[in-house]
Length: 69
Image (cartoon, rainbow, N blue to C red; front, side, top):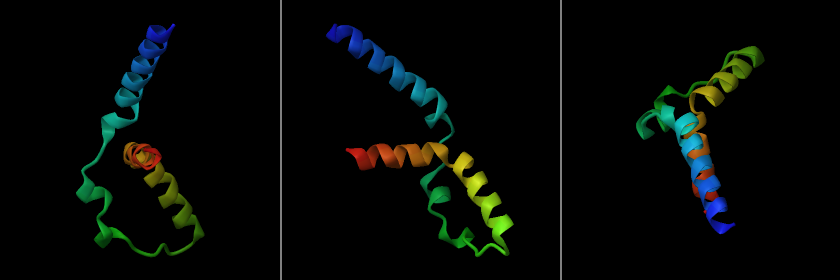
């Protein structure tokens, strides 16, 4: 029973690594504050949030996993 749980956890981690963590960007790109600017309107802000959520999903998942530890 414990071995089955360990195997499932290992498979889940492999799947997560292959999907979410495969596109991790460099920390310099993620924390580049020179590229931050104020959006012109609410439509542009919504568009940026949507894009950044998808683009940096691996980094955010990694930061959340570190925060949980």
